[in-house]
Length: 194
Image (cartoon, rainbow, N blue to C red; front, side, top):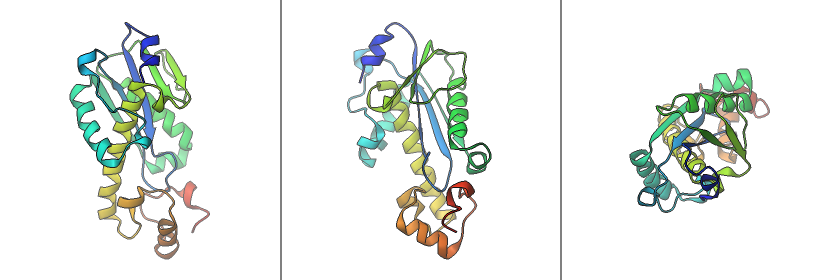
């Protein structure tokens, strides 16, 4: 997990990732984090958020926030996603997260997406499984978004948002057809279902 960090040894490294590009509802959440890389502060178990259980992600989320040198989490809402498309919304969120750090990094390691920034970047395919900083950002984005969707489930019951996190499960699509859309559905994502 530290190969890319070792490549930029001695530099201030930020990792950037997102959660929620594919769901039918809710925002895309982008996170940027600068983690300390000295041995005493490396957090055991950091990995691509998709490879971790929800319980493990929750535990790591708090540790990452405690140890991070700087972090920023940004939501880009469903309306913006509909207006500019999901890729542009993701780029916008990643740029805002990077520029929202309290410390300016020397390099940004980004999971597969190129953003418009003055800060040098290394765009890494499957970066969340290869870079400690990107994996940390992936956990921040995923846990933040999952918590948000659980709250939305209370406001918009019947779609199973706490369980499906807005993704297009059979139950979610069935609810869409029966109930229609709610305020956080992405119109460009649900047009084939209603």
